[in-house]
Length: 136
Image (tube, rainbow, N blue to C red; front, side, top):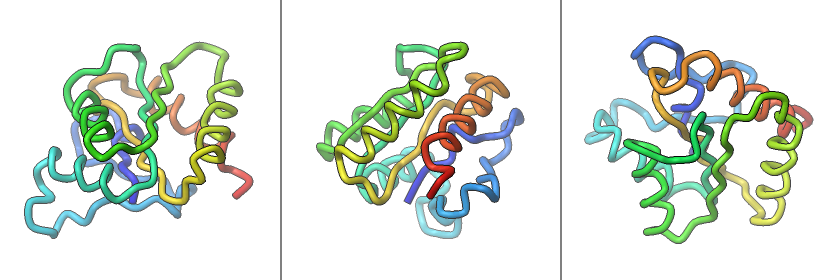
């Protein structure tokens, strides 16, 4: 299971996972209680081996703060990657090392809604994921 929040489009519409990340899965929306983001967030954390949060700021708020709290509740590995211009390769290396260290098979990918960063955040997320996992 993985959250696609960090890959959300600029609109407030539901996140869409780009085809190149075909191994990512979103919680089905037809499951009872799945319409509530808090429930989806908890299921994503609970059902994954680890979580990575992509954001533009080091301080977590709203749903990303909830994600961090749930990671602590379920005692799962956590990595927070903060956007830095021209640092994509080092962020991808951090992510690759994190996944290898914790032997992650199911990674929860999370981040603020599109209104929290728009194209800069989705671009950062996509580039780092491509660099880290493009070879898989």
